Length: 482
Figure 1 (tube, rainbow, N blue to C red):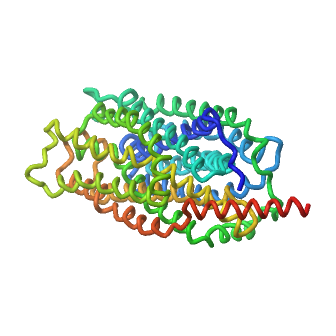
Figure 2 (figure 1 turned 90 degrees about the horizontal axis):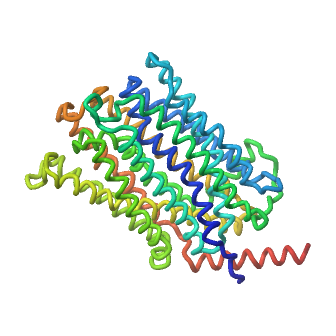
Figure 3 (figure 1 turned 45 degrees about the horizontal axis):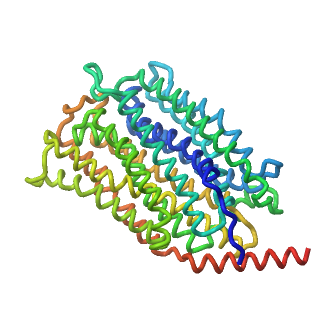
């Protein structure tokens, strides 16, 4: 069996920079959007959650279509790069308009504005994200090198999330006498959206320019039937036939639900449940800048030591436990657990967050690497490579989980009658307790169920070597026959 082609560090870094766009978009989307439309624009929380859910649902429907299109494009710039480039302007413009609704809108008007521009933002990002992930599966063919390449992606994504989160908590929305929490300052959303949109465009362009040297080495588009709705369903059915793929897909869908819920509830939990000022939440950004490089270094070592399936299981299990311990201690009113007026509460919060900070990039990189291995298994089983469709399912799992988290968040905020324009420390204790129950133990069941599915994944290093060897034999035979 031939050795896989080596990718240089600059090339892998250029690929990784592409994740900066998604990181900044997702921070604005998941952390601020529900808060902005419910607290600033004044739209009923359940309607906000419904609008966001509709946008992600429509986006999820387009995922396999865009993935199949990405697999079919034929050009001298390859299958993926043209789509990466064409996504930039629609993504930037729609993101800015998402945070610029006309003043004085009614509940219905705000709902419609959020739905329309939410769909445009998600669709524009999908037009970039799925080809980008598929490009990574094509660039790296080795079992361990894929973990390294997607480790670069996870590293840039995680560091960018830390920077973006630091900007919104420490720069755009500081606590003032007029605005406590700072997220109530409507003017900050204008500056944030313009800056984030510019960063997204720059990141995508860096990725396109930095990986263009790989175009001659990428696989040519295989002959396949024209793209039709019936044909698309057949391709999706073929991908879902793999037991290992179903395990990863459902596991990723369930495990990411907790991420969607935590992101949607972060401003509410940090400010109203733990009593922090926005400046104190800034410590999460600094924590991430310290921990994410450690995760980046751990990813290739862990996947060699434990294999990919057990890396995901260990990281996810640790994250769920660490997140829930302090919340449960507060909900149970354990006597020795410090109150919000204690300086220890910030350290406890940061300690629990540190586990998630280490685990999140490890899970993301390893799952993407597992899907790249599954694309090889799929080619062996069917004779056709479908990275675009495979990563469309991955994108759908993340979006569906985000939709579930935000929709549930919006509905639950309405059910517990969380007030609009709420000032820190003035929300009634019963509402705050219900907030913690929802964000903590009540929704972690999704992640625990995900562990069951990850145990069903069957491709390890030895099995992947067998797959690659059989594929090489088949290609050599086809070349000889030609």
